[in-house]
Image 1 (spheres, helix red, strand yellow):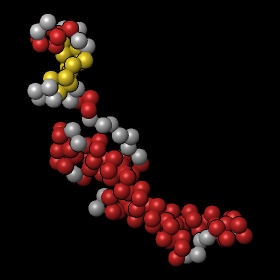
Image 2 (cartoon, rainbow, N blue to C red; image 1 turned 120 degrees about the vertical axis):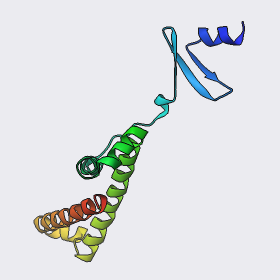
Image 3 (cartoon, rainbow, N blue to C red; image 1 turned 30 degrees about the vertical axis):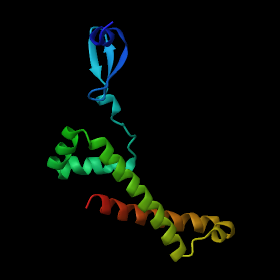
Image 4 (tube, rainbow, N blue to C red; image 1 turned 90 degrees about the vertical axis):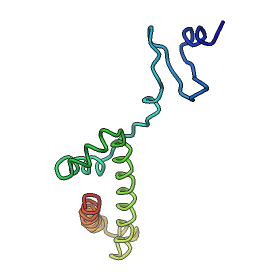
Length: 131
């Protein structure tokens, strides 16, 4: 059996010359390039940034969309925003004395103060990711 017959018979093959894998679908071989792209789940900060890009930066949005990098970019924005959010909540909690001890002694006050901190940090992170 020669190389071409081998190529046409197998369901999954890799062209060793160029390093691309193919999957046979009926009479066609489809490259695995598209399937190698990672699709990430986008969280709320990523979704908010997507909305911002569409409304305020349509050229940048279009560039990311057509280059196939939009999903990865939004995922990265989301990860960085979540890291920033967690760090700022911890810092503000320490600065304002919102501790586990307060939580044990006066749970309602702790909840109210933490909600205020989270709301303030939410605004800071939104402003940061949406410039």
